[in-house]
Amino acid sequence: MPPSSAPDDVLRVEHIAKRFGPVTALRDVNLHLKKGEVLGLLGDNGAGKSTLIKILAGFQKQDSGEMFLHGKPYAPKNVDDARAQGIDTVFQDLALIDELSVYHNLYLRRERLLKPFPLLANRQMKREARTALDEIGINIPRIDVAVARLSGGQRQAIAVARSTVGSDADIILLDEPLAAMGAKEGAQILDLVARLKDEGKVSIIMILHNYVHVLQACDRVSMIQDGAIALDKPTSETSVEELTDIVVNEYRRAREETHKEAARQHTG
Amino acid sequence: MASVAGGSAETPPAAPKGPESSLRAPSVGRQLIGRVTALREGSIIVVTIITAIYFSANTSSFFTGDNFKTLLPYFAPFAILAAGEIFVMILGEIDLSIAGMYLFAPILFYKLNTSLGLGLVPGVIVALLVCMAVGALNGFFVAVVGISSFVATLAMLFAFEGLALIISHGTPVATPGGQPPLDTFGKVFGGGTYSELIWAVVIVVILQVVLTFTRWGLYTVAIGSNKLGAAEAGVKVAFVTIRNFMLCSLTAGLAGIFEAVRSATVQPDPAGPNEYLFLAVAAAVIGGTLLTGGSGTVVGALIGALFLGVLKDGLILQGVNANYLLFYTGLAIFVAMTANVFVGRARRGHGGSG
Image 1 (cartoon, each protein chain N blue to C red):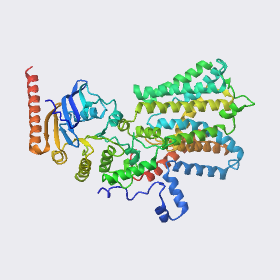
Image 2: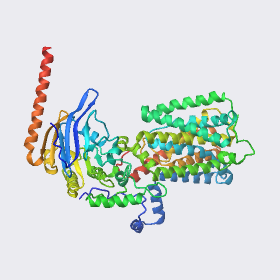
Image 3: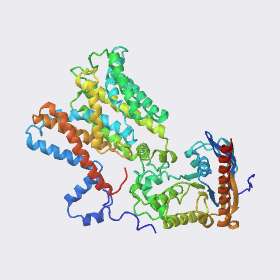
Image 4: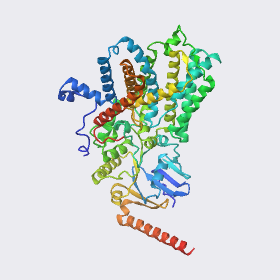
């Protein structure tokens, strides 16, 4: 399935494959992201969603296939390089440093420094972090406390904010931003995503599990099955039922295969 | 929206903003105590002061200029050792090979000076560069090869203490530049009464600034707190790890050379350095640095070292049998560490991690 390469694609992924030893994580993934779009990425556990995100983020390298950023070949050397090219990632484990303060976490790897000696400009970072968090509507009582002291929702919000505060990323990758989160906290993160989208500067790829969230927060949905994209539709043209059907069918097929295999082993 | 969740009942740590809190605070004294205990080094400062007061009250010779002349230089070398070790400990690693560097550096310095005819200062510099290369090797084994730092640096410890014995043939030699009458070199590099103390304070101040106010320090804490997270955020974990091991070996070699100059002889005997290794780690831990990584303070190590120095000195002045010294040191570490745990809990509020 070749991707529809519209001129307003900010990111295009063609025939990406990745193996870890005997395990094929990604077989042949084609994906595209339009400017200002929020793309929801769905798929079973182990379908390869996180691997795809890690490749896009520059944290891992694909075995084959190509990526294009604003139409130009994109092959990030590492996370820093990807970030420098405008792709920022919130990993599933959040990559927050518990012992560091909220503002140090926000500015990790893009610290503001003082002029003559390269010392940390803590005051400036604190001030800017406060303004930036206020702007995107994240309410953290104190930004000089260690991140360890924040609630799960606040931590997630900080992790998402990290990709926007002090960064000029135009593509943000969110790996399960709603994992292990209550309804209220989840709603806050989706609000945050909506606000970022409304600002119109960033395009977002987001891994989600809840179909309702996908239909609510995303413009388009891609489903990875078996290391390849099995469905790619605007959310307006699909429904919870259709998405569920695909997954149910997959489970049915998987069960049949397991049965067949078991039968084969019996006879053989 | 999320405002209710965050900290409401906790006491704020000593933050620069404080007009409101000073209105509510009942007295300056209590506020000061609050501030001290809010520091990571708070508990050990209190414990050290209490210990010093105890010895001053019980031993007439403790609080005297003469005693300070013996006490202050005594704790300086393991404060220097601890200052470097802390950068490795915050990573969640440990460097046992500092005892090897401590022993090896002055012997190499002696050889460079006597056999190769290198000048005193160039000799020191080359010896320290070799130490840093060994540190880089430590870091390489830990960060790139993936050997546990305990094992890698234990091997390095044996190897370099052995190497020190081999090249010195196990015979003590006179330290170059350390023979009386001392010239400027001797006075600066450990021979002067307060030379080591001044070096210790300068090194501690510089390294504390590096730890608190530079990216290097920030990344060190980040790696120790969450290695994968730091890597995902783009911190170059291997680079920082290798750099910290190099720093640790450098301070160890420096302390070894100072002590050799001060005592005028290079003693090729691993027993002393091995004891200093453990005193340095003890000083770091007592000062508030966690063995598990992610948190630490260089100033704390200086005070931890001072505490160990005050304790040993005070016990000797009190006429305690020398056989009891190690035993009391052990007890004192338990007491200081227990105090640390409680003060740390109070500081972090309940349920902080790590």
